[in-house]
Image 1 (cartoon, rainbow, N blue to C red):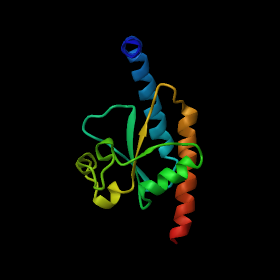
Image 2 (cartoon, one colour):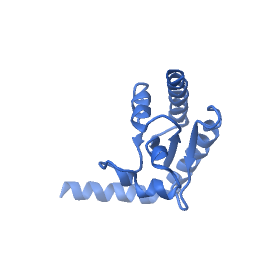
Image 3 (cartoon, rainbow, N blue to C red):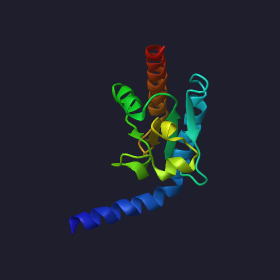
Image 4 (cartoon, one colour):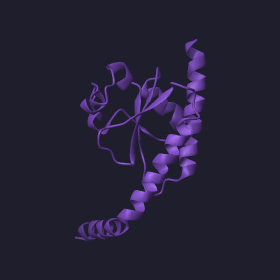
Length: 143
């Protein structure tokens, strides 16, 4: 019974703050899009679905497998997910990523960034710094 009451309280809180949260997520997404422009040209692409939510961003980091990106970012305290939510716990490219027009190879290099209400612009700064470092480091290894 306590769990049900707790869930109800959480739902009430979310509903009463949904506009505030939506603006926060939109601001974070806009900030992320601007900061991504600072990375080397043609190194990262935002995958844009026809309809989207601002709190989930799909990024393809060209030429670097998503698992490698995850490990590089987690070493600096930034945590993202591989692929799409639709492909979690599977060993094939998701239909969602294919719908973006991604090849299987690009889908293997795609990570998912999810925002929560606690995330800040400083978190995005850390993500960009981690991506820049990972791209630079891994690009040197590929030469």
